[in-house]
Amino acid sequence: MNSRFVYPLFLIKLVKWEYWTWWMFYLPILPYWLWLALKARSFTFFTAANPGIENGGFFGEPKQAILELIPDAYKPKTLFLEHPLSLKKIEQRLQEAGIHFPFIIKPNVGERGTKVEKINNTNDLNNYLETCKEDILIQEFITYDIELGVLFAREPNKDKGKVTSVVIKKFLQVTGDGKQTVLDLMQKQTRARFQIKRFQNEKANLLAEVPRANECRIIEPIGNHCRGTEFISGQHLINDALHEVFNTLAKPISGFYFGRFDLKVKSFEDLYKGQHIAIMELNGVSSEPAHIYDANNTLFNAYRHLLWHWKLVYVISQQNRKNKVPTARLSWVISEAFKHIFAG
Image (tube, rainbow, N blue to C red; front, side):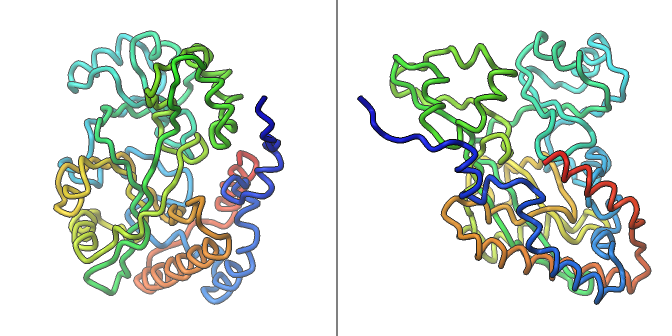
């Protein structure tokens, strides 16, 4: 009999800060943010960080508009489709673009992996369209094994910037024994247990499958922390070669000074050469140094990195404001922040 005690999820969520809600995690840094706002004489100073992105990329920026800033050589084939959507129209556009199953579908406006899905066939696409009430993006599915989040920053008065954070994403997976179901295997992993309720609603058939012995099965192909992806610090990957690669990537992106590239790459050797890189998204000023969510990181160290990045955002924004870059309205920022507080 297995006597190992299984801790309730609510207790794990309380003790392990990587599972805290968005607002709970950020609450302690509010005093520092207020201090920066007072120094800047603006509560929305940070929205000036990226003049080339709507509201600096705080929240709610259209993904398609940002993707258009990225050179074609570094992004997957992508389709932008306006609501209302029809299956016939989408199939025609997919054929024209040379995009085949499987592919990734996502809202044009949205964060934290909301409504992002891997579509494997026409039935999946039909099911997605039944509940979709917004503009969408469709991207070819990149099969590279390595997915990273790379935060890059450059002060406007400097010619070059630096990579400040790298996170390696390990997708949610189980290893089979030929006897237990996916559900059985998920119940033995803390990270997976947080996803069971969602899987019961979205992937009930998958839960009943029995992986072969020693089969490593990826059960969530979307690389978001809130969907069970493990974030592993990749700070050891940062060096002069990486700085140079991302200076090259960022240079053509007009009005971009701070943000995180979410990308896939064929190998780390290719990463340092700037080859076989596919950028799925570029996030603006609301980007986090996601390596802080490494399970081995301390809360103190996480806040230390977060505060350092907010100071950097302040410096970049103030330099842009001196160059007459406007900031967003306070009422809009408050509205967007509350949307995310109640969503998280």
